[in-house]
Amino acid sequence: MIVIKNATAVEFDPPRVRENCDVVISGGKIAKVGIGAAKDVAAEKIIDGTGKIVFPGIVCSHHHIYSALSRGIMSNIGPTPDFVSILKNLWWRLDRGIDEDVLHFSTLTASMDALRCGTTAIIDHHASPEFIEGSLDVVKQGMELIGVRGATCYEVTDRHGRDGMTAGIEENRRFALEVQAAAQKGEGPRLVEACIGGHAPCTLPEEAYEKMADVIQETGRGLHLHVAEDRYDVSHSHVTYGEDIVARLDRHGMLDSRTLLVHGVHLSDADIETLNGRDGFLVHNARSNMNNSVGYNHKLPKVRNLALGTDGIGADMFAELQSAYFKHKDEGGPWWPGEFLRALQAGNRILERLFGESFGRLEPGYMADVAVANYASPTPLVPENVAGHFVFGQNAGIVDTVIVDGRVVMENRHFPEDIDEAAIAEGAREQGRKLWRRIDEIKP
Image (cartoon, rainbow, N blue to C red; front, side, top):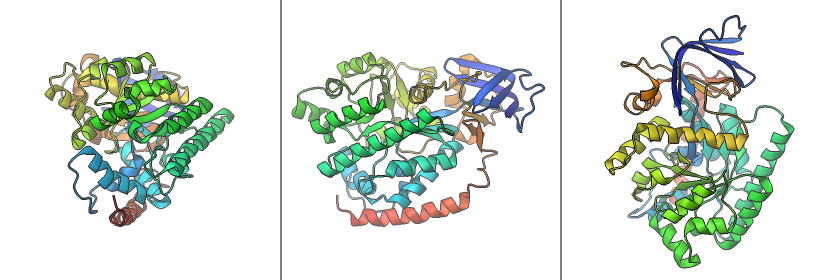
């Protein structure tokens, strides 16, 4: 039993602010919330929330954990004048350099970074062409060790031949079926779920679509796929298949309410209408889109289920939402902070569809994924301006303590004693140096 006492409870969408609240957590879920809710409760852990805010855990709805050791990269990347050259000269060489040890420390690093930002869940999208079989187990084990929630999948692609494509499909199937079996048994904490991953339509032939559609049907897990990030992806679909990207996915029966399509910068109106009709999600990654200079999606307000991700640029969703908002306004967009906070909250709706539990509210019965933060608001904090405070006044540095699945995974910005932060940092630096050397050895 954990009690957070006398905090200001803040929820994002619909926005709500309740002062002097106690939050009682039991068995991985929220048991009671309100003024005096903890009275006469015998708790093993009491967190003093006086002068602090408590809010539901934040979700990064698209991440690449394997990119964690690319920070400050000093490999010889070569020219990157366009998006395809960025992929070929950087990312497709980096993912080929990943082995089990690199992936292990990438996962630990990314998971710890997420919790420091109040991000309690990561929807991961993995690629390591030289280490496919068992790679998703390494991600899962690392996430569980640190205590972050989320999901992962393998990025199926044909860019390393049919055998590599088939191996990626099989890794998705194997992992998803194992996750499914564990969920059915109900044994122990359930922190990591599965999606069925693919790189992008331009590297997925019809055979891949057919087999991935079968895995989606067999496992009951949803598709997680980059689409229309660059205009090339759209042109390739038109030239090769004579149809829009989403229409092709729909023809194969790959779209449903668990679908995560990522970027979508150049989706057509028809694409968005189809995705909306299937109740799927589009995940917007503002900083990545700007970094890769792929353009801006002016059609975001037309998307029914819009979520926010980072595409591997850490898991700081304060920075991501702020960048998304300011870029939108710079492009003359009509939305205000509240619409983007709603998109951030959509990550919890994704979790609900993945785990079959309730997420994203401070209410009895909801999963106990919450963050406690130091935010002494200099102006009134009320439901009508929660989004304004998030965009103009807050940052990830306010996060103090994080609880996931009813367990304290970070307290006073420190991890439990069994998580050796210094050793993990040193191991990550060693593996980062090794990865950078390998990239120099791999030709584009």
